[in-house]
Image 1 (tube, rainbow, N blue to C red):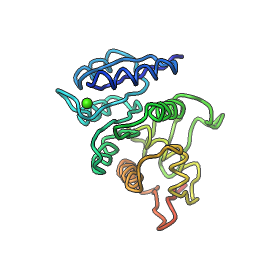
Image 2: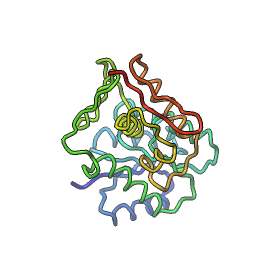
Image 3: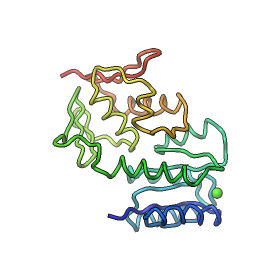
Image 4: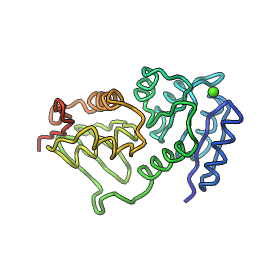
Length: 228
Ligand code: CA
C-alpha cells in the first residue's frame, strides 16, 4: 500500500525539493504551508509520516507536534534552522521521532523517512507469532501497538514504543546506548546522549508502576527489569 507523507514547510523551494524526492521514492505527498493547514490536512487524510518544519507562520511546529500527539503516534520528523540543543530536546519531549537541522541533504532526510516507515509499518524484522509481550505489569500488544500498565492504557510515541519493546525483549540484559541507537535510529543518528536520556525519562514517567523499571547501569547502558 502506498504511504502518504505530509510535508509542513512554508518555504516553497524547500518543500518542492523534498516533495520531488518523496514522489520519486513512490510516496504520496500532501503539503501544508502553515501549522493550521497541517492540522486540517492531518484530520482529513490518512497520513503515515509528517515532516514538520518548526518555523512556520500562524502556528509553529512545536504547537503542531503537541496537538498531533494528542491524536496520534504517527512518526514525526522535525526540521529546524536553529542549532540549539535545547530545541532538539524540546522536540523529543513533545514526541517527535527524529530531528534534522537545516541545511540538510535531501537523501539523508529520505533515508530517515524510509527507516521510520519501515520500522513503523513493515512486518519485516518483527518476531512472528509474537503478538504480545508481558512483564512487570506492562502488557504490549504489537498488532495494535498498544501498551497497558497495570491494566491502564498509556500512550507512547513511536520511538518510545520501539525503545520499550527492545528493552523488554532483552529483559534483564544490559543494552548499551550504541545498541539502542543502531536499533532505534540506525546509523544516521544525529542526536547525542541527552536525546536518549530524554526518551528514557519520558518512558519512565509514563510507565510509572512498581513492578517494572528501566534501570540505568552507569557507564554501560539500560536494562529492563520486570517482576513476574
Ligand atoms: Ca519555515
